[in-house]
Figure 1 (tube, rainbow over the protein chains, first blue to last red):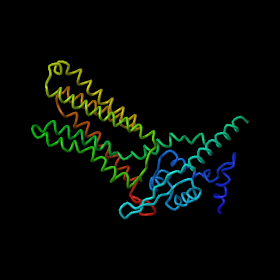
Figure 2: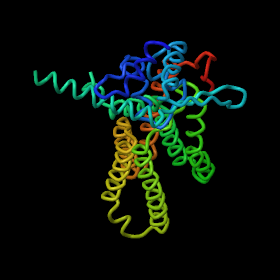
Figure 3: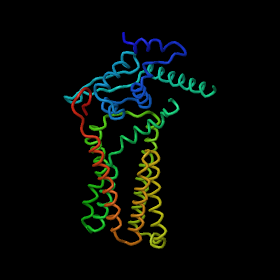
Figure 4: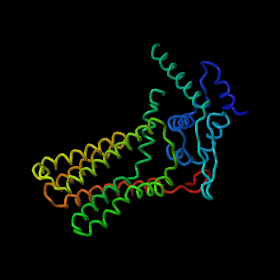
Length: 110
Length: 199
């Protein structure tokens, strides 16, 4: 189990930052997938500016955590990968945002 | 960090980037040029109405052949789809209004001639207003300016009783569209085949 995966499980604990989402590239991916109903691999690559390898690697981690659903299908003879945030992923992202917002609010008060 | 992460802005950015292809301007420009040609074609103008009617399907086809292979596919959320529903209602309204206007013009009612100047300005304002509504609902700021150009072209065409303003406006809108399209094609070339990049 990688460190990220371990952290993803610890994210379920209240008050703990979900490090799987906290990583900048995955945060960007989760943000995009949170605001749209679904997108394909190319769309995410264009929007985030990531390379194919980098994007694949981050998507795999999010998929392993159950945060996204990756559907691979063929359009004619060509493969197309459609990606959607799962209910669990949306919930985790929402929790992450709330947690970060409360941390920022607390730091303002200090 | 999260304060900078405005999700609404992010969704808007994704939407606008997806529509930075200039295709709308190219087709609107062509439509105005066809309107100009119809104005000078005399009895053959009927043949020009056919390509005009095909502009809608053509833009959808061009989007599928040019934009989607370069930008990928995305399904936007329910808020965006609700805005597009408003747009469809507006399209129905515009269609009904166009038919009504056509009937009134063809019947050559006396009051049309009497209030010609006022009606010319009204027509231009209505067109600009319609474009503004589309620009608002589609989050497409460039359409405000395009609407102003198209509205002015219609008003001047009526006032001068010449299709020349359509040529000028069509040329300008088409040129802007082509510049945006070329820049889009350069910025987003077709991706190299790889995992999940087929379109």
